[in-house]
Image 1 (cartoon, rainbow, N blue to C red):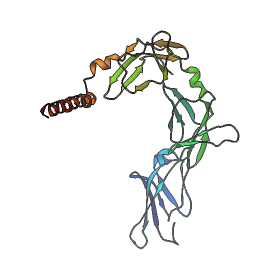
Image 2: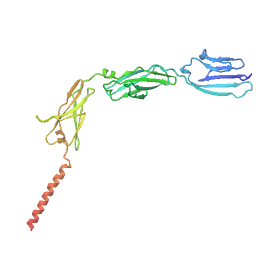
Image 3: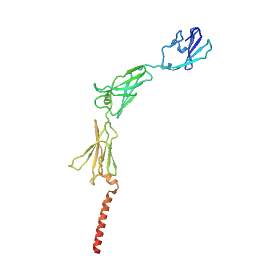
Image 4: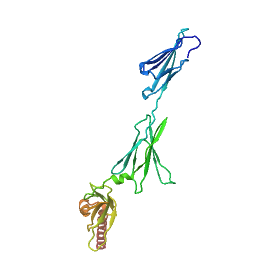
Length: 293
């Protein structure tokens, strides 16, 4: 601002561009063409910028020249941050094989942060997640779960329409399971069986023994199983079944006798052989003693 009859020149600079220069003596100013109709200069030298844009954000410099007494130039600076109001965000859901990926986006607004919130039944608490994306493990249960996304910045806030994750249960097609395959890992003290099917979703597995006719069958649920101890001399045969709500397939049988053939003899028989040798040696010593006496 001008002081008395002093001649003061005020200059506003942005990105090396002289936005405006104001002369207190004549109450006149020079304005850059990029800022025409957007800058107002008051009689006291105050500067007002109208119709601000995102591109106006940045560091501004002010130079004040006192021409009356040839005083040193005064320098000042300030940072202007322009915010655009956020628009109503939109949620997209990607239904994957083992999970659901949610993404939230707002087409307008800067410096936007996102948060997620569940819409539970009345009386239950709400779960909040921060971030533009989120993944849900595992797939939602039969009862639907509804989420909303909120976008906000320092000057505005907007919330999306709710999305029901039940859409993934409807959209995701059921793929028929392929014939499963059993692999056996012959370990030192046990056998590990693993069953897998290369096609199909939402697959559950079960293993079943094939006993002699007239005996009951033992069923184990799960994709893997371990057998303790090693099977006896008589072989035991297993099959694996893979199924989902639309299909079912059973593997070829596997005979656990393969492990008895593949597995080398270990030290379990050594103590027994040593015991027989010791008994033979003791008997021989007794025989020789009696013979000499």
